[in-house]
Length: 596
Image 1: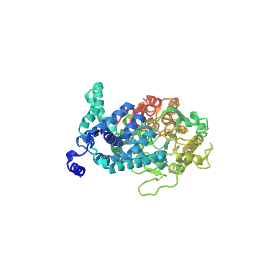
Image 2 (image 1 turned 135 degrees about the vertical axis):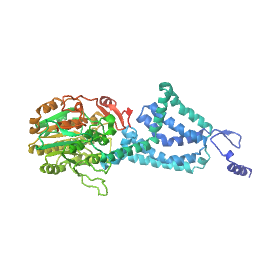
Image 3 (image 1 turned 180 degrees about the vertical axis):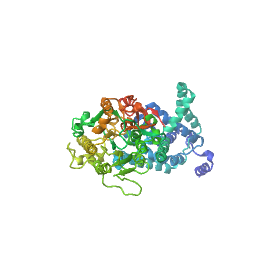
């Protein structure tokens, strides 16, 4: 009875509540609370496990550990001062702990931290793109279920209500927080050290995902503001331009996921370019790099001529469509890329054209999903209709699916020059990487089929242009390349800074009539076939090839100009940092200067 009364008295007096400090037992022996402290610290660390995995998988180890220690100690200080109970902590931290497995799965797959561009990719991802992460999503769900069970166990654990961290532990946490800060002060000084500390907190989980999500929403808002963009300054024609009453037809074809080495004319042993390889008046540029590894980053830079270190300016700069509109051309945008609503990159620029056609109506407004994946050749009737309209001045952008996964869906079933097995390819894509040797072989064959089919599509467009017997050209540039099927990271995908993703083909075809009127420019283009180029040069070169004079023009960036200067080939990486091309391929999946 005496013990019962003592227990009752202890439960009513908060001063006698059990803490993580030393407690006395009836036998007079003291019981260490190291186990209790360990349980509490582990519970605090649970929602921040992605910071530890980032230290191993993504960042320099010590930098990742500093992030983990800085955030954990900062959270433990108020927890200790308020004597927060384990149960209270678990209740409030469990939502973050539940998404920690998904974060770890993402890091394991991409070897990169989650950024605003990953959220943008999520906004625009098709089921095919999302299928790359099928296995990882399964592991994330399993991990979340395990974490949920652990959190519920701790919440229901009777002792969890009694375990409280002692106030003196705040001092220990403060010391841990100050160690990286003092180290930075000694190395860089107080002000840089403070900025580094704030940077660690903002890039650590769970702060980072919410901050990057906010940045992604800002990018979406910038895309929306393109509708009110006004091109400043006059737009005219140079003296070399065709006469006002002469017809002009200029086409830009933006490809998808084509690596430079996949073309036969660029070294592939398979004959993937049988038609383009034999056409006359074709200039094949063999030393071209993409400005980014994702469509949503590279297409805005190609279409506006923006450099990677000024990427956000692309959404407030005039595009080729904007300039050609002002120059008096009828503009068109044709696409087999999914139209994902207001925020889609393709939709934001295509909306500026006089007319636009999207054959894949995936998730647009209230319309139903198009169950049939359109082939790029299905755009040919629209091209033919535009050319038959007899409009004098035409500029058309054709954004194709090219070589995007799933590869067998990019060409008809009766088109299989390299013997790819559709079932093996489908099973491999469903099961996910790593692929078996047999799957790698057939995925490679299927990929080469897509390149050969793009070769056929481009040749058909060239034939249509050639029939018009007027000044015309076709410019082809993919947004980025694609990893091979045996790549160690993200095989048959992109989004990482490998050479296969960053090196792309680029070519231009010119009609006889165009060459006759500007033969000196054509010869200059042929002479620059091996010059180091970045694909944003497309913007400036096309304007000069079309004889357009505008404040947007920059002759030092145009391949058609005698003043062209080869640029420093910088790359916008998936995490929003900037790298040099040569450095990026030498140190893949690395991270450098963060831009906002």
